[in-house]
Length: 288
Image (cartoon, rainbow, N blue to C red; front, top):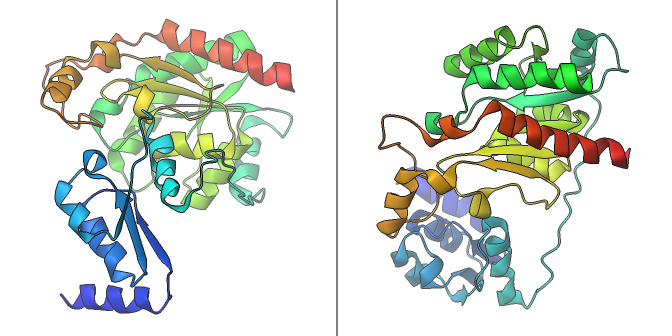
């Protein structure tokens, strides 16, 4: 209770005029009310993850019928009569030491590189590490590019998966140094392509304008996929039986636990991902 009181006091010191709740949870709606804002705006009931949250809003916004979560969340701005859904992220990233270290591992700055992220918060979103390694070998042989594997240094499982990608790449991949979130963003910005499952770094890459190949299984890429139309998606979600059962129960979003003995991501082949890489890199170097 004491922490809630402190949070409310800190928020109200900021004198907010408007508070948006795009999470649609009772907890997030409470935080919006804690802000002391005159206008507390959330989504209308059909778009809430927890319907009781609506009682904490002073205004409701109907985002319409967009499928993608980014477009849906931008729809909350209709409450302010803002209809332009375009966006840019004004990030200022410096070429920091960790990027220099990566170039040193690759033999110099004249070596552009592809990035691979084999990890995710939920293991059923992780494509096999050996498959990532095979893709890295293909990229070297077909496109002459090395691959850098990013990873979360605070997770032993992530570190083990990173080492397995490198070991199965036939020398095509190297590991990135441990990074902070800001350093990771700089590394992603420096890469020519980012290959990943549905997880935070993939969406950081999209926000930074780095081309993406997304590998999707238990989450719907139409809702949670890369936002740019130029990005590539390889998806097994259409054949995900867990996702179908999840939908039949009226749920939305992501299946957090697989109900089958084998995962739908195993249906995504190395050939599928390599084909997506070919398409993406042809666009990258055509624009160069």
